[in-house]
Length: 169
Image (cartoon, rainbow, N blue to C red; front, side, top):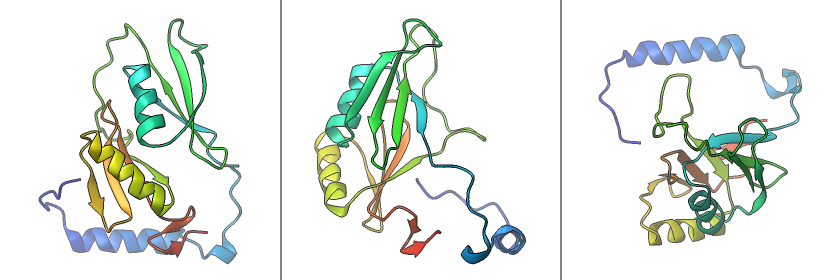
C-alpha cells in the first residue's frame, strides 16, 4: 500500500477517531460478549479454479478441504481452504458472467489478514517471492501481496486476537 498525498485535515481526523473511541469503545470488562460464534467462511471470486488452488494450497499452505458445484449457479465451482481454527476461505468461479478484475471500492473488500506462525510466514514469503509474487513487508511481521485475481492479502505473524502485541479482547 503506497503512501498517498495527504489532503485531509489530520487533526480533525484524529479528533474524530478520539470522539468515536470515547463514544463507542468499551473496556473489555464492560463489553458484552459477541453474539457471533466466528467467521464460518469468507467467499471471494476467482477466475481460474486450478490457479487459485495452486496459489492458496501450494504457496500459502492452506489445504483445499472441499470442492463442489455451486448450488446457486450451474457450472460454477465452489471451493474451500482451511485457515485453521475451523475457519475457511471459499471461492466461486462464475464462468461466462464476464466479471471484471478485482477493484477496491467504497463498501467493498480491502484486504484479508491471516494469522500464521513466524516460521510459516518466513516460508510463505520465500515461496511467494520465489514464484515472482510482489510482496510488501511491514515491520517484519506483516506481509501484503495480491492473489492471482488481485485480491489483497496480508499474512501477519501475530497471535489471533492481538494487534501489534496488544490483546483486542
